Amino acid sequence: MRVQLERCCGEWRELEEEFRQLQETHKVYRQKLEEVTSLQTACSSSIHRQKKTLRDLKHSLQRCKPRATPEEFALIQQISTQIKERQNAFFDMEAYLPKKNGLYLNLVLGNVNVTLLSNQAKFAYKDEYEKFKLYLTIILLLGAVACRFILHYRVTDEVFNFLLVWYYCTLTIRESILISNGSRIKGWWVSHHYVSTFLSGVMLTWPDGLMYQMFRSQFLAFSIFQSCVQFLQYYYQRGCLYRLRALGERNHLDLTVGEVVCDALFAKWGSVRQKGQV
Image (cartoon, rainbow, N blue to C red):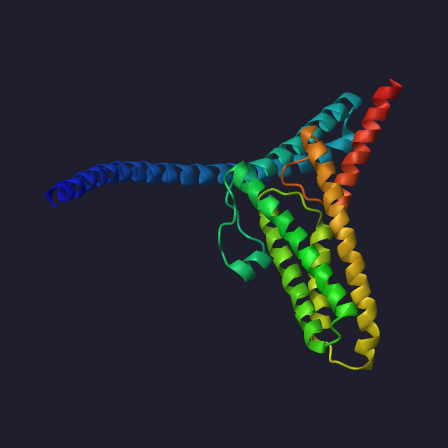
């Protein structure tokens, strides 16, 4: 009994020493966190000032163009090009700084900071988004097949349509978070998910009747086709994005979206042809 008590006392002393070290480490962590917050505020303010100054400079250069000599016009063009490059640099910087959420995120999440600070966290969230799309595409494909050929009930249709509404709503939220973290998602891609959410809601609330039954089969057949295309597109575009990232042509937060990758592939093909012709 005494030996066991001494062992417990020894473990307690070790835990006390570890706890003191933990307190010191946590104190340093809080100090560093305050420093990071101050640096974020300073960077955000500086970027805001620079953006305002660059806008004024850009307007001034535009006013100087009509009366400029060829040499002055070339200088104006050079400065304008550098202004565009500076704006792209600001975009990359802001991806690591807290920013105000857009209207949609404010309505859904409130005024919560959704900026991820590390590249690892950004890529992990983007990868989770891609996996979410893949898994839900498979589930929606199976659901559409079941409703089209096996389950001819209004209740199962409502479950399927509710799943569509939830899926597209979740996509819009996740894509808004990705945009806040520097992802260059195309505007049409996000907009078509808003439209899909609304149309899925129409299907969910459509009363059962002759018109609904006439449209139901076509809608489910289209859902099967769309899920198959999205499934195949995911694997194809994933391979394309991997190659483009390896070549340094794309950002790690780019998505498996056809237009983004195809534009980059055509640009790459054009540069290869030019080199071959030279």
